[in-house]
Image (cartoon, rainbow, N blue to C red; front, side):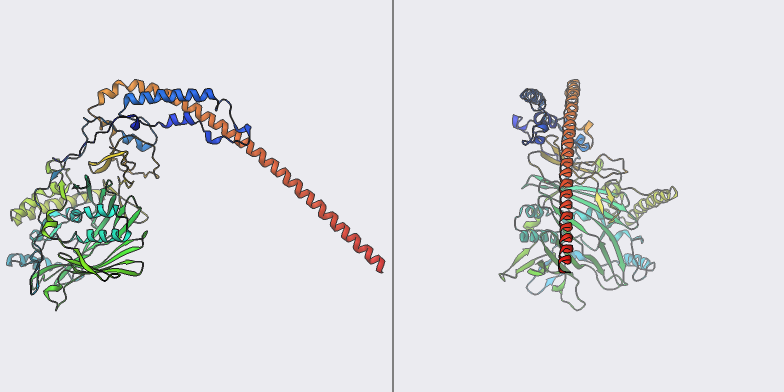
Length: 617
């Protein structure tokens, strides 16, 4: 079993908690003093006696905090209730249990020979006569250009895992993102992001397979262990819509400084002898310490040879990875094999890395084997990416939730009977089990429609203005090594265990209609504070009454401090009003004086004009 590690922290005065209430008593709004006038000073508020009393109260409070040494009762914000943490080394962290993945199918690698580059056999399949008849029966139901999302596919072409699971293939090399997060050079960061992006494609199932279409409400979660940084990358996905089929996902590793979120609308088009699976949507990669977002899209999968020839699966389309803050971008093109192309033209990828409109480097090669980069400034070409056996062996270790501990709608448990039948090559049983799931989904949809109810996702919510899906419990704060201890996951909620509750400045809290626990966006350790500390509950109860008395005393002192602040503000307002009246009076006097002077000058000029006219007349 993979459990989060415990970190013991020395309980010294350096780690004692600073209380907000004590700071109020100690400082007593000294910032409101004005040296230019004594009328703004409150002699009682700023007397030496008051300072001495404040210091004594501060010492008493610190002594009590040292006696507790393991908790903080500051209620500085609504979300801080969720940040309750006990630093007892013997505490058992309440988290989801993960185990190492027992088996992983990587598919077959591409082979270079002296004469040619052989086609990867994992991308081709010869269909048996029995299955060809099933395909012909299926094709009679469709027409060219039709969307296949509502067409029931035969089970012999299914890969025994959900599409939510397949989307996690892009994070076995998330260590590239860990390296990019600490890379100071923006150009090198972009290159590492591109390398990580390409690393998600060489894993392919054997034969021509597609994953299960997730049913609405289906979820999947897993994590990867980073041995070099002693951190974990968490992956959470949920099917938030069935028609159209939308899959939302969220990836987080706050300790290493990155998170990634997005949603995919899966569409498919039939063209006669070929079909394309289009993944419409964007993913947003964020480096938390830098405030940089890298927005990217996905290529499409193209299958040809359905009616005649050998069935072949390829990737195609234009991909753009762009960071608006730095101005760097990468454009990648996944190329389909031309009709008259050689075997070397399979799985080709070309691209370029740019700063604005300036091309800094070009990429070329094969996305499932070697990719080379050519630096435009130096003219040097070197290997950019190569999934060698050594690199595959050093992939990050993925851990999954044991099936017996999964929820009813988690992918592996939900599709377990279909998966078992496919692995046993019992297509009849697989079809029956798949039909049971799909029929249950249709029945639930009819019931919701009859009740005029809409499906509400458990872990994601849609922003009405943009239509984007966001993880409810996303925490994009930079990692604080002095306060943040461990990032973990419980019941689909990715959380952070902290040393103590500290005042945090957070954005406006979104209101959810869901009955799920509060979002731990401020580094909360658990959405269920009452159950966070099971081992020390008796000890906390014994000190409960003393804490209540202390809080009552603190409350009265806060009220007194607030009253003093209010009186000081009233004095300031009266003084400001007096100054305004005085300035207004002086301005009126000056305005009146100027008016009289102007009138006198005018009268003098008129008199002089009349006199001159009389003389010269």
